[in-house]
Amino acid sequence: MGGDPRRLRISGVYEMNAPMFEMLDLAETPAEAGHAFSVYMNAMFGVDAEQKEQKERRAGRARFRSSFLRLIKGWGYDSNGPEGAVLKGCVESRFGILPTFHKQRIVRFSSGAWTNYVEEKMSSRFHGNSI
Image (cartoon, rainbow, N blue to C red; front, side, top):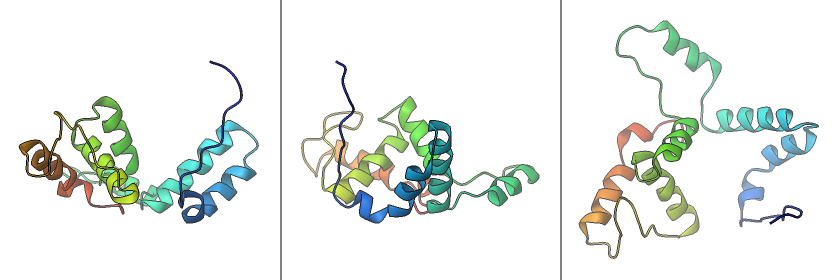
């Protein structure tokens, strides 16, 4: 399978994130585009250098708030973990696509599988940084 990449349009994504696409259009290299994307996502989700520095200065049990990177990394390791539930919930709320699997098949709302998915999706540890 070769050929040219095809443009994919998801309703509202460009309109809601026009500044990001403008930054990407200005990038001259893939590295610049990656940096622009990272800057935009950090601004959108409230992850800034100051927050990271505070975490490094703290001792003991202080923890860095969850971020979009934590979600993506966690989902990459296990799409059926809590991070996967949060991302599935994002798709559910934005596009109306209900999950059909999370650790097990989800066949109806009143099932234990649905309850487990919702519990992981609503975990308080992921409700910071505008996630």
